[in-house]
Length: 114
Image (cartoon, rainbow, N blue to C red; front, side):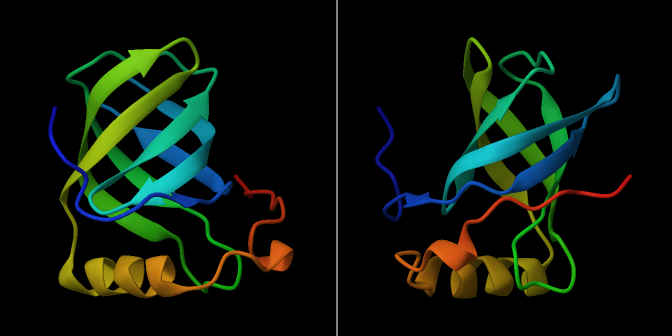
């Protein structure tokens, strides 16, 4: 089993993901470098390539991942590995993971407009 690069950060925030076939909505359950755990009613398959937009409270724009690959699925949950991100998005992810998420205001639910 591949070792994780950094610890997981429990972060429940909205995410929109797109494959060649469809667009889905869900929620991240945790975030790490290099990936995240997503829960969604949209069915994906191991090996699917996705684009992600992760809506983090306090951020002006969503965190964008231009290429992520589904590494595993189990029921409504699936894990993705971030393969390709713009350098500015990678820096944003690193800053995000450095924050203290013991503050509940950072993880409160937020709606995503269509």
